[in-house]
Length: 278
Image (cartoon, rainbow, N blue to C red):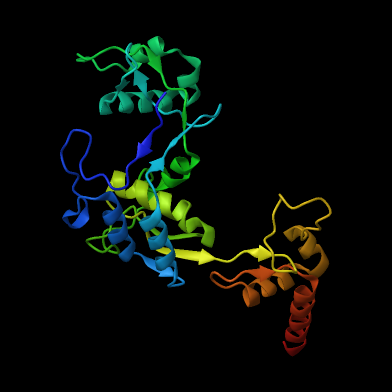
């Protein structure tokens, strides 16, 4: 079966007509770079990181050969040619909306085709279907459409929104600095392609918890690695207020902080001093 891609530098759509992005831009990559300029990035170096990621990224391969995930709704005719039709895809989406994504795997190609084939279809009928699944970044990157656009209570009221700002646009996306190549980018590309605008007004990047040697805390560390305790363990040792104080003092945007006992003891002394002053 075919691999499926989103072409980042495609100048025309599948039927040969040019896509019209904001500002009359006809190139997906250029449209994404322009949209990045309209977002507030905290810290400000975040804009350089995501621009670098978008500028250097290859075409996005969105198909995976896994036994689980969201299916790619692709049919093939008897000659193995893909059937590319927007109505068919929308009909599959409606079927999944009603029965869940497993319906794609539970029914064979003939059964599925009978349920999603457009009434006025004049092309070849489907003989087989794809068993590939979508890249998981499609799932998380579609959150603006799956959540924000579908829930009216999350929309901005008309008197608080700028005329040029979509009412569904999120105020802020918050994640770690590794997501400039991940969620921040996939969300931007999918929202721009499907909705015509970035999904967020502001992107705030946070740091990470690291060990006493300032190395990343990872489940893949070798045996014998003593990982920091859970939040519950720290609360039990120092108390919730001390943990809150430690977080407020040490955690800032894009700054990683070491989870070590000395830091907690320092915060505990500060809390004790503040209590005496009160």
